[in-house]
Amino acid sequence: MSEMSRRQVLISGGALGALGALGIGAAAQAGIGPPTGLDPRWVWDAEADPLVASLLDRGAVPEVNRLLWNWTRNDQPLPAGLPADLVAFIDGARQLPSWADQRKLELAAEFNKSRGFYLNLLNGVGGGMLSTAIPKEARAVYYSAGGANMEDRVAKTSILGFAVGSLNAYRPDGNCIVNSVKTRLVHAGVRHLLQQSPHWTSGIPISQTDILVTWHTLATFAMRKLREWRVPISAADADAYLHSWQVTVHMLGVRDEFIPATWEAAYAQSDQVLPPNMGPTREGVELTDILLGQLAEQTSPGSISRPLCNALGRFLVGDQVADWDQIPHEWVWESVIRNVWPILVRFREGLVPLPLVPEMAWVIDEALRQYILFFLTKGRETKIVIPTGNRPS
Ligand code: HEM
Image (cartoon, rainbow, N blue to C red):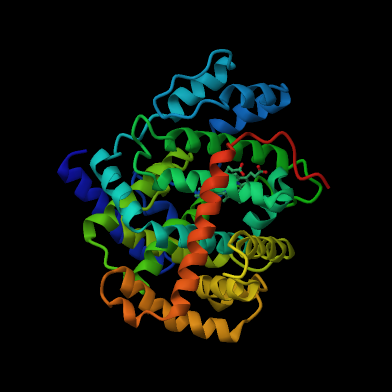
């Protein structure tokens, strides 16, 4: 893209983002690509949806999953034997957008590494708690096949999270393209299958707005929290981090016109789409309880208790979401975390010396490390596959 047109995109993104914040414009117009007037609430995935519906109806999915199991590297040719329509789709879907900037992706990878601790915490624990407070997502997860085994589901979802954050994410030897394309196929499968569930009454699931809502609970939420915690971030790093998520959401099938072009556009779109799409559900409460139980269980015995996990969850997502998710108050732990967290951040950033870091900070630090490690390990044991049914009721 020429410098001039890049600037025009950025300028229009910013201006339209501001309109969005005023509630005048549309999330639909703050994007990288030129607007077409489509409304992302009523756009799904025109290419993947009919394809996967047909694969499911033809009974081809188990064999497709078997063949794709060892398709893992970005540069890897597809295995022989896949249906021709699927091959045609993947050949297109695995191409990076023309605006992908390898230099920025490399910088984002470095940023993900240096800020990995915070990002894993924010995207893993924080993003998980937020997603259970998005009614459509909580219900979709609960009533789809993966809802019956949340440990496996979290591990699977973390595969993409770690793929985005890894150093070779979009390099030929990385796996982010593969996992994004597989996720796009999974979402298409869910769209077809969930509508057959007696529990699902919300029309076609996973619209482009829904994907953007979740995207904001990952990328935008993380950037806002890093800023709130005063983690130093250069403008180039912030831009690169945004870029890596822009590329990823494009690879998940979201149209460029809906993808925020700048952080300003992202904040505006987030403020516009999150509030109407968040709230409490019975399913969300149950999923949160499972997630926090896992966090407590997976870290080494004695180092982190369920009350500490509850307090951490509440600290990350704030009172409103925590109340929707019915995370119990743990007044003592909440005040401990509020007090030690800024010190821990400053220590990690080399801004305060060791003797000033209270013992409690290390309990939290260590617990989170173990949690992250656990899901890193789990994620390696499993792979993303297209579901063939819903949650067994
Ligand atoms: C599956 C990521 C948005 C619902 C997955 C998987 C990943 C993923 C990596 C594969 C793991 C698995 O099979 O369990 C993402 C990302 C999103 C996003 C990065 C947005 C940026 C959404 C939204 C919904 C949703 C908006 C619902 C409203 C589901 C469901 C599954 C799934 C139901 C399948 C679970 C199953 O196997 O039964 N997603 N997702 N996702 N996603 Fe998403």
